[in-house]
Amino acid sequence: MILSDAEILAALEDGNIVIEPYDRERLGTNSYDVRLSKHLATYQNRVLDAKRHNEIEHFEIPPEGYVLEPQINYLGSTIEYTETHHTVPFLEGKSSVGRLGIDIHATAGKGDVGFCNHWTLEISVKQPVRVYEGMPIGQLIYFKVDGEVLNPYNKKKSAKYNDRTELPVESMMWRNDF
Image (tube, rainbow, N blue to C red; front, side):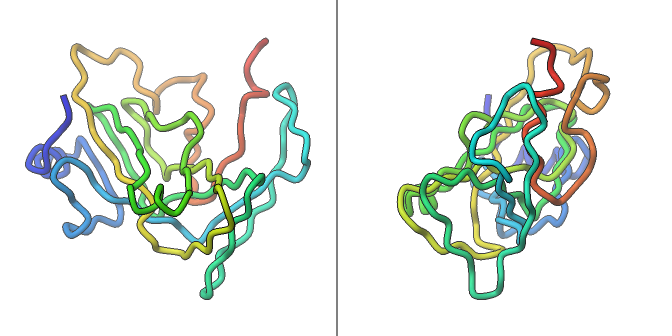
């Protein structure tokens, strides 16, 4: 079941959802709009290796915006830091963003109960598009969880994305055993 605006507000009030900074104007009927931060990154190497640490180069979006190019995997982040303690957050792109040919995630649209961080975006574009810091980029939708959560993400020893950062974070696939 998806939380309504009233349920999201109640969860914010009791601390089960945290959004910083929070702006009531960004609360939709059943979602909360998040914005693109000034932080972007790209991988240093053209060929990536799932068994190796693929390092990234961080840079900032200038005031005049930044043109994203096709065939480049950009990592971005949200301005908003979020926490969810009793719901499952899903990050979806806004329709206005999709109509510009911008995808904000390849596969990682679902968070976990206990996710506490800024969201890293996996950005790709169909054609060159100029983006700006602070532009609406996605919306968080919250789903209720049935039953007790025994191992929230922020308590898992194996969690790879628990270090709080406003910067985009590269893939940590290389930390898995395979």
